[in-house]
Length: 269
Image (spheres, helix red, strand yellow):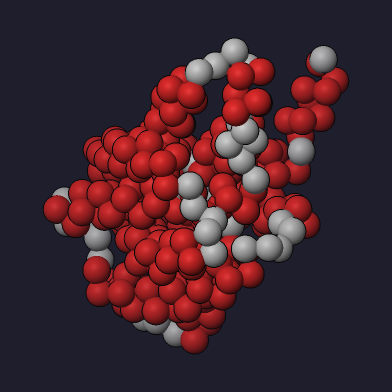
C-alpha cells in the first residue's frame, strides 16, 4: 500500500487496517450469502494504492479461512454434501492452478466485461425458472457427475484461480442449474469447493511474492467473522431469502464490471 495515498486521505496506518477489517467482514458475509464480496476488498486495497496483481494474492488467505469456517458451520448443520464436493473438487483444483498461474501478470479488463455479460444472462435464467433455484431437483440428478459437469467446474476453477471475484455466483448457478441442488445446499457446496482450491492457489501467489501477509491477517479476521454470520443467515432464512440477495448482488457487481457506477458518478460530479 502507498503511505502517500493513505496520508492524503488524512488517515493513520491503524485507520487503514481497521477499514480492512470491516471490509473483510462485509466481504466474508457477501461471499457466503451469494458471491462477489471480494470486490469490496479489491476496491478498498486499490484505493490505498496496492497493485491489482498484489491484491489478487492478498485476498486469498482471508478467503481460505472464511470458506473453511463456513464449511464447518454448514457441515455441522447437515447442509453440506461432502462426497459431491470432493468429486467436483478435482476439476475445480486443476482449473484453479492454471488460472492462478495466468493471473500473476495478465490484464483482466476484457475478461471482466465478459463476466458481467454472463452474470446478467444468469439473472434472466433465475427469473425464467425460479423453482429450480428454490427447490432443487431429484437426488439422482444431484448424484450424477457427467463429462459436461466436469468441464464446467474445470472452467469455474480456472476463473476462481484467475481472479476469484464473482466465482461464488458462477458456482451457485452451476450447482443449481446443472447439478440440481437448491440454493441452501448449493451455498454449502460453493464455500466448500472454494475452500478446496484456496490453499493451492494461495501457494502459487506466495511463491510469486504476490501476498501482503500483514494486510491479509486483518482480512482473515474480518472474512471469518463475516463468513460465519452469512452461513447462519443462509441456514435460518432458506433459499428464498438467498435468491433475493443473489439477484441484488448480481446487479450491483455486473454494473461495477461494466463501469456503470463510474459513469453515474461522473455525471453527478
